[in-house]
Image 1 (cartoon, rainbow, N blue to C red):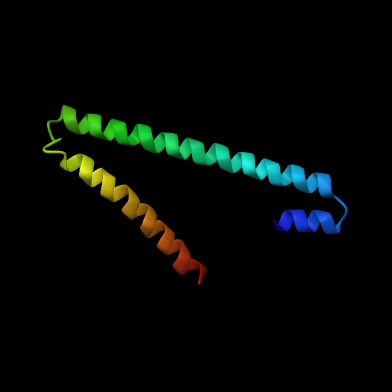
Image 2: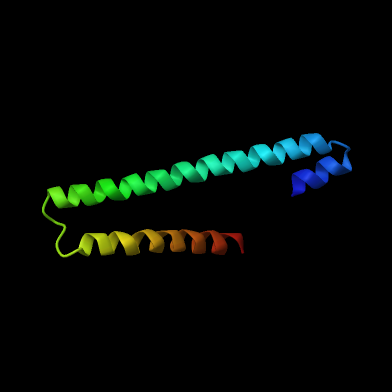
Length: 84
């Protein structure tokens, strides 16, 4: 948003739109790679646990299903506290 306001104020609207588009594409690529890595990482962790005979009664699946969101929540909370 700031890029567009700055570029509009300086008469560089096309440059601002191109920069905002480049940022959006970069964010889309980055988030896609992170999401794909998370999916494959979880599959690999579960496969490793099953090979070692530690799959139990789905405890590893439940643990991974809770630990991941908990880490994301903690990371977000740390960023919030850091910004205050």
